[in-house]
Each structure stands twice: as structure tokens, then as C-alpha cells.
Image (cartoon, rainbow, N blue to C red):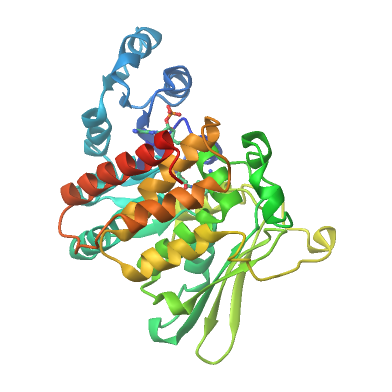
Length: 386
Ligand SMILES: NC(=O)c1ccc[n+]([C@@H]2O[C@H](COP(=O)([O-])OP(=O)(O)OC[C@H]3O[C@@H](n4cnc5c(N)ncnc54)[C@H](OP(=O)(O)O)[C@@H]3O)[C@@H](O)[C@H]2O)c1
């Protein structure tokens, strides 16, 4: 029985993780659940899964959550520190990190500090703090298991392969809903259009990131840290059917790919079952039904976010943190209809240009840079200077 804490339980990955738990009651036991502000869903989940602790980041939601769980034995806490307390439960073997954005960095570092196995969905944590996270993971000798479908695919392709036999990583991208749009058409797209992903059902922020291709950019940086590959050895290929989740090219020219339906339950389950494989959470892949799969190059002119992510990743230091913060603020502003779709890369560009790079030494330094970059991006939006 593996005891888990699920951070970001109320989100898309959180709910899919609980489905995996529901299907494997003899293998997984939930000890703690956390959320941002959705106390109603968190209370429902707590009544079903009976964790020892639920923690909600929004302190204003404490009263209602506590009321909803009165009479149960579940301990209720609120605030950012309470989310951190979730990784201190006993007994605990693994943490599923499914908070969205840089808000996930401190909880992941706390989980590493506790020596727990980390099942990582929260890619922004590696984008923002990759060097510190990987140093801490190596120092503690822990397993950092990718949940992101592309990185799970690469991880699966790499099982039992010598590290020096890997020539190149090829990350697939669906291309998002606007793959075939012209730049003129992109200027007018609405949040509703951008939120309709052709293949995946995901949270709002990552769905917009998929439409701008920033999601792929964040994944390139994530792959750099997870698999210790240089940026020139990480390639992005658009594959609109999202059946091949990613590939690895080896030194002898062989290419190994992982295939599956576009559904997060399989990569989540693999992170939890690794190195074992459990019963399938989905119907078998039907190649004849899929019929054909295609590939094309991403268009950097139309989707500048991907190029900015490569640039920030190569620069290293604080630049990926700045990129991520500016992106989080711009995506929220687009969803609130404060800016247009093409202004997302414009604000990111200006925010990146307003920073001088620094070496990263501490998490506190990163959180300060994150806050400064958010302020700069927000000011650009308010002043309309983009
Ligand atoms: N969805 C996917 O298919 C997918 C695939 C690969 C990777 N990922 C990655 O997985 C992560 C989660 O994605 P998602 O799509 O599941 O996002 P989501 O649906 O927006 O869920 C985010 C979760 O984080 C919680 N949260 C938000 N802000 C928080 C804060 N400040 N403190 C504590 N908790 C907070 C939310 O709580 P409330 O709901 O209560 O506000 C929710 O539980 C992201 O990093 C994403 O890039 C997602």
C-alpha cells in the first residue's frame, strides 16, 4: 500500500489522480488532499477518500470547509503553510504535485526535504527552480517521476537504457486549437476558442499554454532538467493526433516512442506504479481506429512563446522564472479579457527584456524574482504598453 499526499486535488490532474486511486484501492491510500480555494470539491473528495488532513490555501474558505467536514475525523487546515503541512503526514510514501504554476515550488521543495517520492505534474516547479530542485533530489537520492504525458513517455522509453546512449529527445505537441490559423486570425481569438483543446481535457491555464505553444516551451525546459539534455538535443514536433506522446533517438539511430490515448490517467498511474505496471486505466489503443498519424514543424513566427522558452532555458539563471511569471500573469489577463491572444507573447518579451540575468542560489531569491516579474507584467498590462 502506497500512502500519498495529493497537492492540487481539486484540479484536472488532481481529479484524474483520484480516479486512479478509486481504481486501485488495494494499492493506494490518500493521507492528505490540498486545494487552492475550491472548498466544495475538496470536501466531497475528503468525504469519499477519508484522508487524515485536508488543507486549503485560501484562508477565507476555512470556515465553510470545516463546516462541510464537521462530524468527520478529517483534520482541516488553511493557508499556504497548511499546504506545506500536507507533506509532513505520517505515514507518507509519495506526493503527487498537481498544483498549477510557481505556487507549487515551495510544496515540492518541502516534499523533497521530507525524502518523499515525487510524482511531478506541476511543470512550472522545474521551469522556475530546475537547478535547485534537481540538486535537492540528487542530494536526497529520491525518485522524481514525471506525470506530464510527454515526460512520462520519454521516461518510459529510457527504462533500462544507458544515459550516454541517448542522442536526442523529441517532444510531440498537438499544435493546439489554432495550429492552422493565420497571424491575423490569431489576433481575434477569444478565451472560449482557446479553451477548446482538440484532444486533451485540462485545466484552464495549461489549455491556454497549449494554444500559445508556451506549454511546449515549458516542457522543453522541464525535459532539460529531468533528463539532463542540452537544449539543442531537445526537439519539438507537431503531431496533431496526440497518440505518440514523445520519442527518444538513440546513438545508433534507433527511435523509440510511447503511444497511448490522450488521457492523463495512464501517465499518472505509471508514476504511482513505477517500476511496476498495474491494470490498464483505459481501453486498449486501437491503431486501426486511429488510422493515420501525421507530423509537422512548429511555426516560430506564429507561436513566439516556444522560441522565448528556448531562449530563457538556454540563458538559464533567473530567466525561466521570469518567463514563467510573465506567462502566468498574461494568461490570467487573457482569460479575464484584459488582453488579446497575441499580447501574451508581447508581454512576456517585454518582461524578459526588463531583467538582467542572475545566478540562482535560493528558493527565496526565485520567489522574489517571480514576484517582481509578475509586477512588471501586470504593470505592462495595466498601462497597455505592449
Ligand atoms: N491537466 C492536464 O492534463 C495536465 C497535463 C500535464 C501537466 N499538467 C500540469 O499539472 C499542473 C496542474 O494542472 P491542472 O490542469 O490540473 O490545473 P487546474 O485544473 O487548474 O488545477 C490546479 C490545482 O492547483 C490548486 N491551486 C491553484 N493555485 C494554488 C495555490 N496558490 N496554492 C495551492 N493550490 C493551488 C487548485 O485549487 P482550486 O481548484 O481549489 O483553486 C487546483 O487544485 C500544472 O502545472 C499543469 O501544467 C496538467
